[in-house]
Image (cartoon, rainbow, N blue to C red; front, side, top):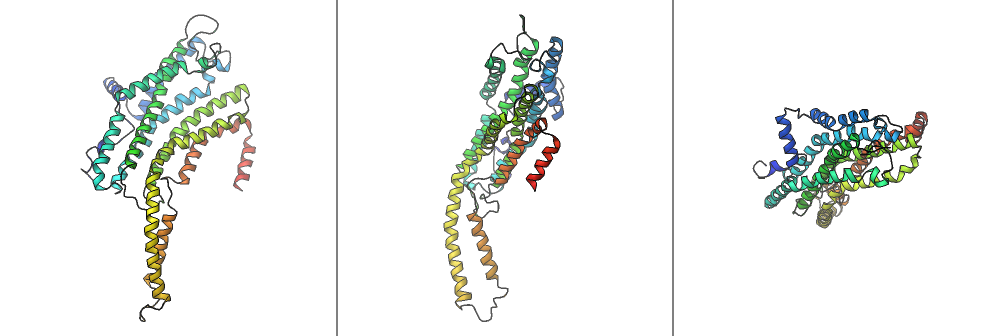
Amino acid sequence: MGGVLANEAELYFDRGGPVQRFFHRLALRLRVDLTLRGRILGFLVLTWVPLLLFALIEGRALGASPKESLLQDFATYVRFFVAVPLLIIAELVVGPRLRGAGLQFVHGGLVRAKDFPAFDGAIARAAKWRESAWADFIILGVAVIVSWTATIDTVYGEGLATWRSPTRSGGPGVSLTGLWYHLVAVPVLLYFWLRWLCRLLVWGKFLWSVSRLDLALIATHADRAGGLGFLGTAHTSLGIFAFCLSAVLSAEAAFLIVFEQVDIETFKVPYAALLVVAELLLLGPLLVFVPILVRTRLAALREYSLLVDRYNRGFHDKWIGGAAPADEPLLGSADIQSLADLGNSFRFIQEMTAYPFSVRAILQLALVTSLPCLPLLLLVMPVGQIIELLAKAVA
């Protein structure tokens, strides 16, 4: 397929954009390590290390209460030591899978030759959206605004004392810990989140463009999705984002359970909502292929019904009606195997789904989303009781 697509090299979603290029050039000039480990360490040096130093100086590392103590805030550990590092790792996990899935449309013969220019145009538009300076600057602006306004302190009242408060409790003056948290640490964290959300939107728009093409789907494909099953496999890698969100929510819940004795039952609805949102957000974009999958299945059912009818009548006339040659034995006849193969093909069409992902993909995403919630059980239930419940569930 080499040379078919002029923009094939531009089909990627894990990197790019003016902000990333600026920091990449800055890191090269400063001779900063740009490996995966170097980027994670650089993020922690920029965000967590100053927070800890300022908190130690101002007495907010271990304050008068858990809410006023940086080192007792479970969610902060998860945000900076789990969530963002995983978002950086996602560049190596999610990025190649989305690119591979995009190219599979051409390399797998799903895009017809007449649609190569249109597919190439879809790549070009995705690259334009990905490299948009306006999008990057809007993401930065939203990250700064949200980190300063949408906080516990502003939502629930300025009188609520936490280690994140930008003002000193009990006296005038500002807190360096709070200022660094709201003006540097959280904006950087939110930028990673919003940037990936933007890239997933670009990927979704690319899929929508591809779904408008006259794809050469195969109704008898063994994946029961007309040959688009590779999309569901690629999207299971997006579970890393659901894991991050669930981990932050679980850390917040752990803080409330440990220090404020909140009942674990309180979090059933938020977790159920997270599970639904994760499934819709990560698998929902693939629903753009529902119309073409439905059309392919209905057309194949009509065509193969006629084929099966003709073959079955011919088989009946030959072997039941007595039209078979006298010197052709029934035992070992290829007609029987062909009849079985045709039946299997028709069954594949009947079982073809209207969406390019399997129930297994849904369950895998649900499992990944639920994993960070499991440690919460250890806070309210003895290990022996948990093992006993699991044993009963398996039995």
